[in-house]
Amino acid sequence: MKRIVYLTLAAVMCMSLCACKSKEVTGAEELINQIGGVTLDSESAIVAAETAVAALTEKDLQKLENLQVLKDARTAYDVRDNELVEVCAAIDELGDVTLEREETISAARRLYESKGEDIKARVDNYAVLTAAETMLTELKVAEVVRLINEIGTVTLNSGDKISVAQSAYNSLSADAKSKVENANVISEAKQTLSQLEEEEAERAKKAAISKLKSTTDRVEGITWYEAKVHPTYTNTRSFVLPYIGKNSSNVWLRVKCNYTGDDWVFFENVIFVVDGEKYTKYFSYYDVDRDNGYGDVWEVADFAPSTSDIEMLKKIADSKETIIRFEGDSKRRDITVKSTDKQAIKDVLLAYEAMK
Image (cartoon, rainbow, N blue to C red; front, side, top):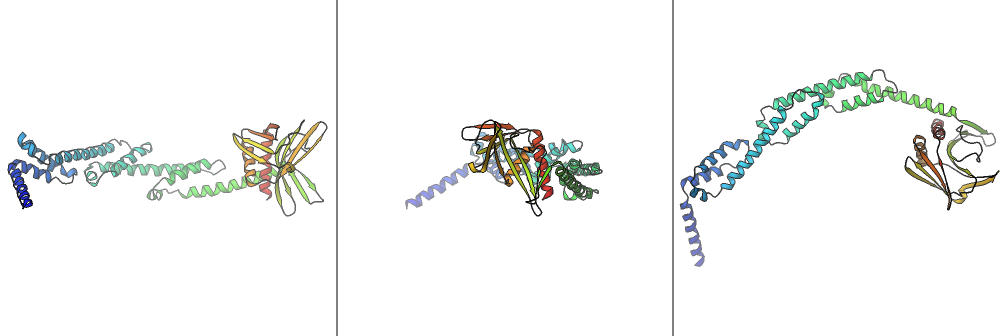
């Protein structure tokens, strides 16, 4: 019984409230409800609702229940309108099309694509953007053609020109690439350059072999190849140098770490600091041969280098500065690798590649 009474009272209150609204208020509310989802096509509906609301008295305005909906619609419309203005302004600012304007044109395209379809449909200068893009593509194609033509006769110094032309060609769209009539020149130039580099590498390897001195052990059937700066005697100076062994069926590389001085180090580690990068080679006591004479001592570790050891030697050969430390438990001696030894390392490694 109480529930029926409450429902009746609620219905009466609702009818009373509705009865209190004027037709102007209900009309304004209806116009606001008709706005719906806001697009750039919503302007007339928003203006109609705003006009109706503006005509309300202060008393009627207080009874308007969806005024915030109208305010939100106006805000949303203004945002979209500003976005339209932004896109149109970005396109208007494109100006004369040059290769230097590529990013500006791309930025305008990205801005356009970021907007909704209602905004895109209102961009009245869109044709300016597409025309700029077409012109830019033509300019880029012409630039690629020019860069390819600049390659000219391929020499060992043509690598940079070929790379620049290839990079510019790769940046083109598939359609633009089809318009580059001399595109085949790039691949031909790369093949020619590769052949020239191979020939030069072979010449360099042969030249490296000719720089080495050799001695042959006729009993063992082994020929040993060393750089000309490689000391004949271990007590001459301290050094780290590779050398090559070759017999009738094999070629192998070895490295000699040689310390010479007036006092023992009993080194177990050889530390290489190559342009600030540190490497350490470890040896056991029995890996190192030691001897003395005429007031000098010498300690020698002779080993077959690993792949990482060979990479380190290459870095030493190309380094600005390499310091080598022969380190024992309590003593150490440092040497700085001479430019002649760096070249010797290059020559031996090149000769080793040629002999393999």
